[in-house]
Amino acid sequence: MTDWFALTPDEWVAIRLSLKVAGVATLAVLPLGIVLAYALARGRFRGKALLDGLVYLPLVLPPVVTGYALLVLFGRKGVIGAFLEDAFGLVFSFRWTGAALACAVMGLPLLVRAVRLSIEAIDTRLEEAAGTLGASPLRVFFTVTLPLALPGILAGAVLCFAKALGEFGATITFVSNIPGETQTIPAAIYNYTQAPGGDAGALRLSLVSIAIALCALIASEALARRTRRSGGPE
Amino acid sequence: MITFNASLQRPGFTLDAGFETKAGLTALFGPSGCGKSTVIRLIAGLERKGRGRITVGGRVLMDSAHRLMVPPHKRRLGLVFQDAQLFPHLDVKANLLFGHALTPPAERKVGLDAVLAVLGIEHLLARDVGSLSGGERQRVAIGRAVLTSPHLLMMDEPLAALDSARKEEILPFIERLRDEMGIPILYVSHAVEEVARLASQVVMLREGRVVASGPPAATLGVLHAEHQGDIISFLQGTSATPNPDYGVTRLGHPAGDITLPGLIDAGAGLRVVIHARNVALAREIPPRTSLRTALAGVVEQVEGEGALVLVSLRLTGGEVLRASITRLALDDLGLAHGVPAYALVKTAAIDRGGVQGLRA
Image (cartoon, rainbow over all chains, first blue to last red; front, side):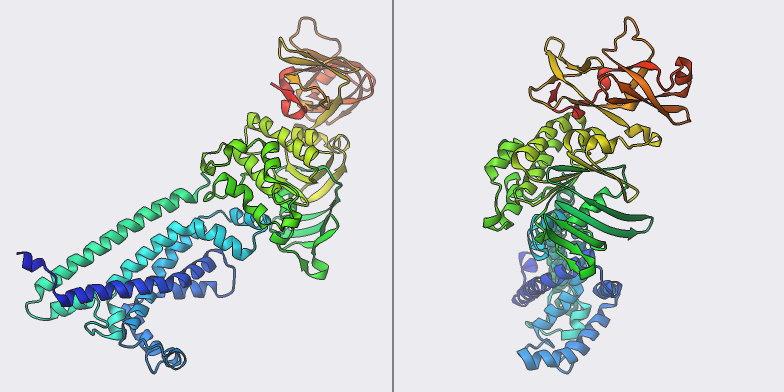
């Protein structure tokens, strides 16, 4: 019975890879997510509605379409992919970095939404007060806006991380399903379900997925509650 | 000190105001929605759509003709918001020092110790801002602004969100800032007692325009009969006799003593603000009445034709006291130009906030 629950070495590889891909994706997309959230929450510029739409697009698009778009843009022959390989030697296609990119794109809307809500909850007069006290706009951002939005940023990062762990469609379309390189937990589960006798492995990895996702959601909720508390004037 | 000449268009509202102020405390006075806060925001640089020219202490902060717009953080002005706007993620000390740390050392004229002493907030230093009372929050907000050694301190209705007890707690601190620290102050308010008590100069705004500007007694006197709620008179006492047994002060006046609801500090200004709506008129002093203040005078003018009229009484000694009474009472008593009458004022109707140094 205990053997049945024991994870095989291949499964451990998939779990470790998943955590690495999701972790790198979340950390890499965090600065961009915060800047986008700030621009959407506070900015007044042309094309804001378009930017808003683009950021949220992966949320409503079929993941396969997102994955295909990444393949076209970031593949070795893609416009951006070819440039990045020439300039920085950075390759995405069929590498774990590509899996991280797909996860980042899919997690971005969730991150931006959480951060944006927490920035919008900050009274703009606090930022104005900091300005009249001599703080430049950049300093206001780092000393007032960012600390006050921190619970929302953490909540958004956790959501993004959880989303990245579960990402399947865009990842498999963009970087395929290579064990040890791009085979994350969902891809490994998919493999198990396609092969005879893979039920036990699929169940084991599913339980791992459920456990990680549940932890992430609980952490995110707890952080969101703190945001609501610290967002008000009291 | 300030020269202000600016206009701003917004849907349903136009500001087009010009005024100049001297050092000391200038009150920007007017009803809600008259543009007071917009003027402050233009001076602070938080409102960027305005046109015109603004200078503070000779320094040009905005000049739309020359496309000049100094950003808020380079203006070196202090601003105190109505609801304090303390940083919730910092404690009281960090809030106080936020702007002080950003002030170039050579320009730091105000030190933490002096501010703590003047505002009486030393015991709050380690506290979390969430645990402060409304009055404490406002004092910390004032201290935070003063600690940047501003060229001008602007306060946007700093007492409006506080009850009258908290107001009386803060008013003396504002007087100390004005008198001991010598910081020019622009004080926004729609409370006539505050303005009368604090200001050496009043700029009165109505619907985005300056309708009067000058010393308080002259400026606040131009309030017309259609704004009866705001109409006040100033009376200057000649002596003060406290009665500690009863907790009142009798203020000497040529037309008769005025009984004040509290004990007055020695050396206070002895200037009283009385609302026209709190003054009754009588042809003779009523016998056996609870009214403690009856001032003798002669009716000089009657304004208004509605249910209520505004009667100006020239008191013995020359000051004018205005009373809002019904037209019915006016005709009943036969009051008209030249008729002698007494102005009766209930002590309870005198706002302590309008008398400097008066304590409960």
